[in-house]
Length: 166
Figure (spheres, rainbow, N blue to C red):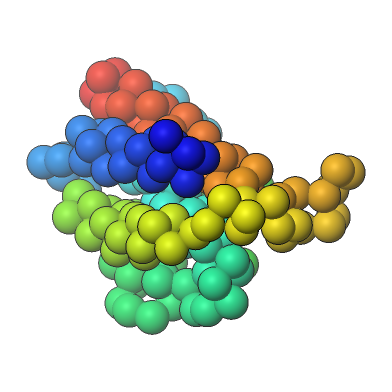
């Protein structure tokens, strides 16, 4: 198994985690948080998808999936390419209001499919390409992809935990 296959395998595990966290929840349940200021299931899944979408669009030098459809209104927020939830206040996080679990799953599935296609097209040498020189050491594509997958897995796990508290 080469590095690309490992990334494809890890990324391929995420849809089930996301689906398990959101399936059959009502909009109210998606917006529920265990205490004021804590993140809701809806925000966590919206955020993990936004981060993957924004990073992938940057790698592709293309528009984000979020901006090419009617996704933003389905979450009660503006279609802002710079808003991935990073640094959200409790009030901003609470403003993310998914209309349904299907909206979350549909947006995630669209981004996931785009990322899966991207991963399949990579060669080993691509993973060493520097994609962000704002860090020391500079971030390679391989490191960025691991970061995206890791972030998504952590937030999906958090969403599953909050669901368990419901």
